[in-house]
Image 1 (cartoon, each protein chain N blue to C red):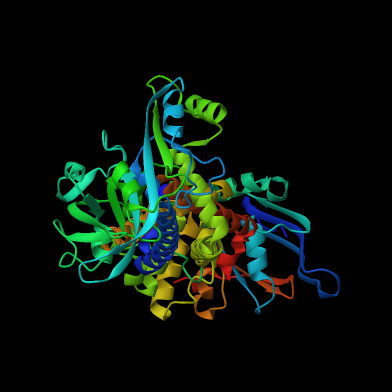
Image 2: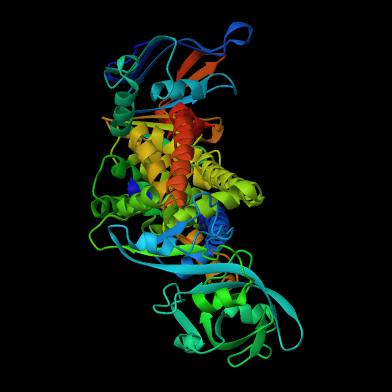
Amino acid sequence: MNYVALKMLFGDRAKYLMLLCGLSFAVMLIVQQGSIFWGLMMWSQASITNVNVPIWVTDPGIAQVDEVKPIADTAVDRVRSIDGVEWAVPLYKGLLRARLPNGEYHQVTLTGLESATLIGRPAEVLEGRFEDILQPDAVVLDQWAVERMGGPTVVTVGTVFELNDKLARIVAIAKTQKSFTNIPVVYTTYERAIHYVPRERRTLSYVLAKAKDGIPIEDVIQRIQSQTGLGAFTAEGFGMKTIVWVLKNTGIGINFGTTILLGFIVGMAIAGQTFYLFTVENLRQFGALKAMGTSTLTLARMIILQAFTVGLTGYGVGVGLATLFGFLAGHGGNLPFAETWQLLLLVLVALLAICIVSASVSIIKLVRLEPGIVFR
Amino acid sequence: MNDDSRPAAVRAQHVVKSFGNGDTQVTVLKGIDLDIYLGELLLLVGESGGGKTTLLSAIAGILDIDDGQIEVLGVPLSGLPSSKRTSFRGQTMGFIYQQFNLLPALTAAENVAVPLFIQKMRRPEALRRARAMLERVGLADRTEFVPKNLSGGQQQRVAIARALINEPRLLICDEPTAALDGPNGQKIMQLLREVGRSPDRCVIVVTHDSRIFHFGDRMANLTDGRIVNIEHISQERIA
């Protein structure tokens, strides 16, 4: 009877397409909204992603990556001395104003990397050579900085501008993930970053570190925390801490969360109701089958098969459409869009759950269905 | 009412069926006694609301009765659990409805094969037998047509082929000619008449259509929940 069930499903093309459209739209809505939300969250921790190191050592009271709380310069050596640490380097991160040759001012995030290793540098360079950052007054901009500061006609490799009245010469343009605030990022060496910024008692923002191979990163983090009194996190842990802070302290959590929840509820309601209506419209046919001797169990199996077939097809189409949207609209990194496998799995489970629920409601109706309906 | 020496296909004794409860309770069948024999075509007639469809549903085991007993081919239906009754219905009964109740997505051959699918017969064999049955009802050239592309008469013939495909001993027809014009109705009844003539089969037809009365062997008049008379139809009327 599986054959009959599938023919009933696909046979009325208009009804099937309507059902498929409803389910696909529901899935697309949820995946698209969920991906944009998670994309935004990824942007909020872009400073961590772009630096791409395993361990971040911070002030113990740090709330999130962009709220820098400087620590003592000695922290680097203290971390290096801890058993299990393979290497540890300083990182400067702070806001500064840049003055362009055309007289415009822009706030920038100055990132100072240790000059010997350049650990924390972006992986991809779009123009120039990142290593030229070691030249006098050299800085590297990310591609968003070029966009924000007026485009390649204003800012390009070779352009000289001022950072706190000191000269800075662009030697390369690097590719990075866009950040939540989209403040231009200027990379230079740690020593030169200290030279650019006004003198403060503490200038070290973070210590970046890596655990030795074979030693669990959690153990090393634990040692750093206990032996230095500083905060220490894995990149993922620090990223999640930042995301939680953003959700708690900005309206994004409530506003976007409400939108996603509504999208989820509306999407699932559409999916459930569409399939339920499809079954109800076919009740007379099921009644005829029941009168002809089809057991309720067989009819229930037919409905479940229909529900799962259309559910999985709708899921595939919906995810495909959402991915296409993300590819087209988010091309070039201008739209926060992170379609993760966890989101896809969650939507799949939710969709299958709603299919089971709506199929169950239909089956209950079917159990109560009096086959005499066919005589009316 | 056992006034015939032939074996009874259906034996209804003191059958009572009510719907609703309290002040709104309506008794639709008020003690029906009726025997229907193998090898006959019984017409069940009477005014609308008289209980014909209810009696038909009860004989088919689709509807539980409140009192009395119904035996079909010697099996007391009231004693069977619902699942067994469904299975018994699938193996021994065929149904023809006023609205045909064909599955619109299936071809004529697939519709006819449905009772065989229910009996878990393999699809190629079921379809082969369905096509042969369609040939018997004169639709050999329409086997791959979907119902919407068939005329009313053709759809009813597909429904008859479906009802006969698993060679049921009891054929239950509810207003089989109501949606058909005169000539098509006559053709359909001729087919049912032939089935009813088979000594190990029995056909029950609920109808209002006086143009087909002459196809029956007997005609039971069900009015206000009671069989008010059973008329033997003379064989001369069957042309």
